[in-house]
Image 1: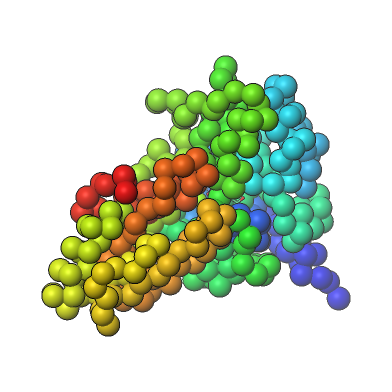
Image 2: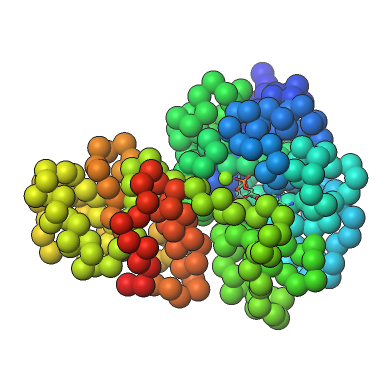
Amino acid sequence: MMSEIERAAECLRAGKLVAFPTETVYGLGADALNAQAVAGIYVAKGRPADYPLIVHGADGDTLLRLTRRVPAPAWVLIERFWPGPLTLVLSRAASVPDAVTGGQGTVALRVPDHPLALALLAEFDGPLVAPSANRFGRISPTTAEHVQEELGSAVDFILDGGPCQVGVESAIVDLSGDAPRLLRPGGVPREAIEALLGRSLAGPAQGGPRAPGALSAHYAPVTPLHLLTRAEIHTQVREAMAAGRKVAVLAPAAPDIIGPGCRWLEPPADPAAYARVLYAWLRALDRSGVSAILVQPPPRSPCWEAVRDRLTRAARGSRDMPMTASMTP
Ligand code: TXA
Ligand code: MG
């Protein structure tokens, strides 16, 4: 009998879409060298066609064939962080379809650190594109059930590997230009990358190629999410309760007033643990019938960068604009 991995690889070879777990979030996989299969990803996700995808491989050798030049800093990062939640943007080889890169001169590459992802990549024996397996702009899935909820019949096969361990997407570092740039904070903290490179990472280039988060609505729940100080949360809770509206509060301490209409969740105090639960919590709160999700953001320190980034985007992308843009508690 064929194993799950063999069946999934067979689907991919037939140009179909397979969702699979990675250490960060679930990916929606397709054969990276089959332009038609890649086109299917854009349809399934409802994603703009010029938005580039990350190519996943079983090892560095498979992926570096897709590049034109591998600069010295890339070798250092690959040696230390692959497999792992770090994506590198490098100059692309001619063999990479335009559908993958959005027509850009660069390609994004990563080796995921998950046994099922690695087994699938090895069995498929080639590179796979795998954007997060959610509809465009929505919260990334961290369980197989989330993928089913998001994509339903648009996905041909789902490999279930249980909940993802990292919980937010990979960090994306662009090494294709003169200075290394952090295009998206993520699974590998900025500090760890900077320490290894011996220099600081610039931000995304202004007007540069489509960087993640160039679009404001991203990683967003449908329920309005607001980033607020403790005092602002207090005011919002009081107003909501007076108006008979239910709210959820994500804050390290319980709000001063708490009643049946106010649901308080205490997020983990450790950044890695917070990242692991963040998307599942937002998804659950989205379905819980609350009128707003009130979040007291974690500290500004570098180790919280990825979590703060996703919370900021969730606030911007959720249906209404935030009541205040306050991020300074
Ligand atoms: O953790 C992850 O990276 C997950 C898992 C499934 O591996 N994947 C993921 O893929 O987050 P996706 O497609 O949701 O995000 C890809 C991001 C996009 O925001 C895109 O802008 C950026 O990578 N990207 C892809 N190719 C690029 C390129 N050539 N230059 C700049 N950014 C690129
Ligand atoms: Mg995504």
